[in-house]
Image 1 (spheres, helix red, strand yellow):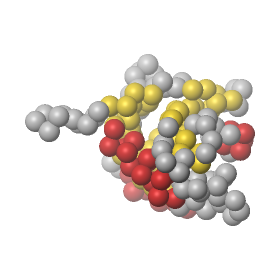
Image 2 (image 1 turned 30 degrees about the vertical axis):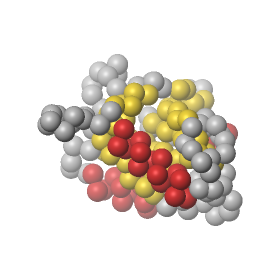
Image 3 (image 1 turned 60 degrees about the vertical axis):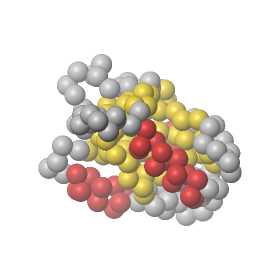
Image 4 (image 1 turned 90 degrees about the vertical axis):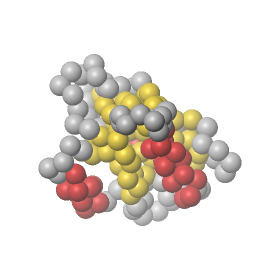
Length: 156
């Protein structure tokens, strides 16, 4: 399991997306730098991209990203130093833990961010990867990186 590093700006965009579509689930892509060869190094998310929740039914408890939208996101970053490294979605009025539906539809290797959202707040966030042999989610360590000092030109 690989730790995850996420910029505070990306986290704020996820929170805003969750509040904008509440009480339905929001969803989107985690765009990251290519994974370093060393699995002890964290996966670094450099941006997030919202996606449409295409679930045909109760969107307050389910999300689906259409395969064409995932292909389009992958193509946008093909040949760049960016890749689709995972997905985020919200859990309206529920904990920031994957549901059984989430687990049943997850793929290994990707990172999954789950954000708890209420009418007033976004109280919790969790990061997970699917363990392929057991088909169970495992929580991964999440580091939220504060915005860079404007006087410094370094980025994530």
